Amino acid sequence: MEHNPIQQYKEQSISTMTPSELLLLLYDELVKNLMRCDLALDKKDFQQMEAAADKCTDIIRYLDETLDDQYPISQELHRLYEYFIYQLVRVKVGRNKQVLDDLRPMISDLRDSFRIAEKNCAEEMEKKQRQTEAT
Image (cartoon, rainbow, N blue to C red):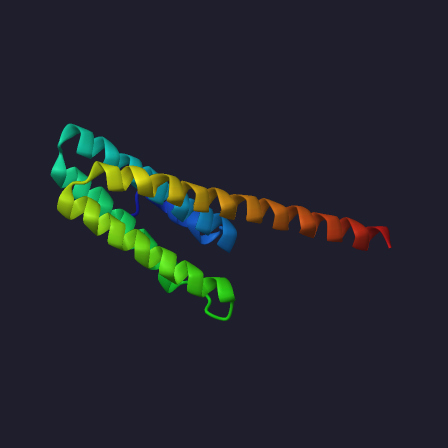
């Protein structure tokens, strides 16, 4: 079976990403699907809303499964991801826009926190590298 060049490029791009880049990509995809869920709810397109909510749930489950439990924050993130999944079920079952409106900023803020942490780590590594080169 021959691969589509665009699909092949996407697969190659993902396979060469750093763990932090992949994490941010997953969060971006999660936020994008939350927006799709919201738009579908507005249009009363419940099939599309459920598909977007299911994709969000799949991403959150993946994020949860890949946590490294040696770090204390992982336990907090497990609970947070569990809460997000519970809320997404409420959105799907109740077609509840208010729950979605409450959930979206929490997930966006978490994504932004990871983005800031990644940037800070990169700057710290750069700083250490400059110090090493200077000595």
